[in-house]
Image (tube, rainbow, N blue to C red; front, side, top):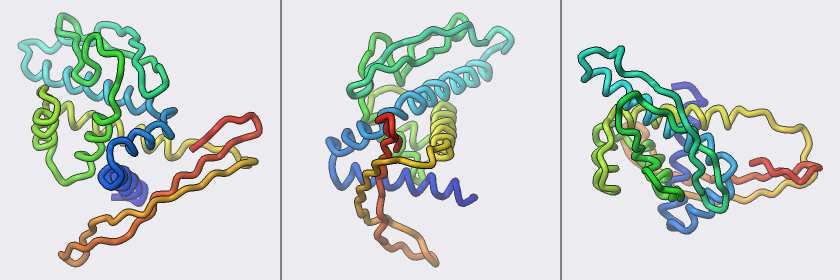
Length: 210
């Protein structure tokens, strides 16, 4: 595992600990701070679900040439105080209902995203994560869907982490929270303090960047 992948896993663990130690309402505040990355993360989840469905259908189809994407449409969903457009892809002749954004649902609850990130940061297998989501939310998700969702979210987070920033910000706001993170060293478990820093820069036009 390279240093960037390890850093992404540490970020995920810190987010999980933030929610555990400060409660769901604090998790909501955290997502409100980062709501401008909600669209790419949610789109990545939906795209991962779509790819997982295609793979599963092709595995069970007599002729996989009959299973293919058949266009797309846009659904507007509400995340916190923002309304964001999500591209939903169709599969020819199949049920179009998404488990991540069910039919007629217009509000996305942040707890689902946080739970996926929380489960992704554990050592659970994709099958075990799928079982946990079924237990928490009452719908079944195949392990292949989980695998694609986690991979696409990690890719989006990596792209966001490497995005270009401006050289100068007239205003910088910094805050930090200390968490106890469980680590493994020499076959033994121990807790160490880690700090999650939130840095918001405001440019000359008043635009914020995290």
